[in-house]
Amino acid sequence: MLTSLYVEGRSWFHRVPVRAKLVALLLASIALFATDSPLPLLAAFLLAGGLYLSLGLTLRQAFARVGFVFFTILVLAAVNLFLIPLPQVLALALRLTALVLLAAAVTATTTIGAFMDEVTVLLKPFERLGLVRAADVSLALGLVLRFVPDIFARYQAISEAHRARGLPVRPLTIIGPLIILTLKDADTIAAAIDARGFRRQ
Amino acid sequence: MNTRDLVLVALFAAIVVVLGFIPPITLGFIPVPITAQSMGVMLAGCIIGAKRGALSFLLVILLVAIGLPVLSGGRGGLAVLAGPSGGFILGWAIAAFATGLIAECFVRAQNSEGRQFAGFFLASVIGGIVVLYAIGVPWLSAVTGTPLAAAATGSLAFIPGDLMKAAIATLAARAVYAGYPLLPARA
Figure (cartoon, rainbow over the protein chains, first blue to last red):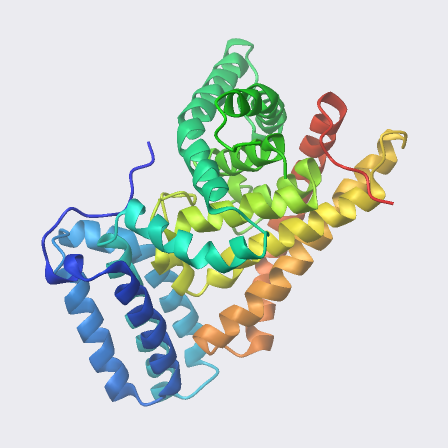
């Protein structure tokens, strides 16, 4: 149900360490916002686009992943046409699409496990301050992945119950029961976690 | 944070993900379709409170960032955060916190039903609309270069739909509060 956006592949970008990719993304976003001239931004756009298309995604898949964001960028660029000079509109749109393509490339070449390792490293300072425990974050993440299918099945059951009674299926009448039924399980799940000593409390 | 809080945070994040699967409703008099997921911020604050609601949304943002397609329409990944509406997604956690804070201050078990409705609606409107737009619109303007005034005017098209969401979230939150209260009270 929740398949990661990672794409299986052996391209060179797949082999770059995650941390390097994330740092590169951060540096690229700073560099892209530092310049306003269309030419370097066009180069960045072409580079990011070439990189993204070289990862082994089919054109259709590649477009499906970024199409929605591109649509928003285009709409805003169209609005900008009436408000700011053309070269600037071009520069803004190119910068943002380049950034989005690069970000999509990082997402497509990084597994969830690799991301989580980096998240654990990033959480270290907070862990030392006693604000959060990295193990808790992983546990919460696992719980979400575990319970999404269950909650979706529950949603379908409630929709069926609506239809069986001839009621229209509306978010308003579904959300209440869905949330109550789901959150009522919290005590049992918490007890199950503590019984296994996962959090060592 | 005890284990029950941790589980509530995770379960609510999972509910928000599932809300993304519900097909959006279109209403004739509102230009933008209403997605159930975007009600999540208001629901989280009003139902599990400020702290847990905000943590729930930090978890959702983490899921987006590590490349899971958890947003409505199967969107996800760093590209969404880098795009024009990234500010709205990152703002969710703060908006959920604000919603929860207001709900915790104004809603009490001994209040009349009408006062509870008013409390939840106020929390949803201020947290889920005012605070969220106060983060998302300047972000969008900074990223896309659209002048702030134009971006703000354009966002007005979404306000009727958002008020509708606040109304639905109010009714749902009050139903949950009556059936299975989890919202902590704040003096």
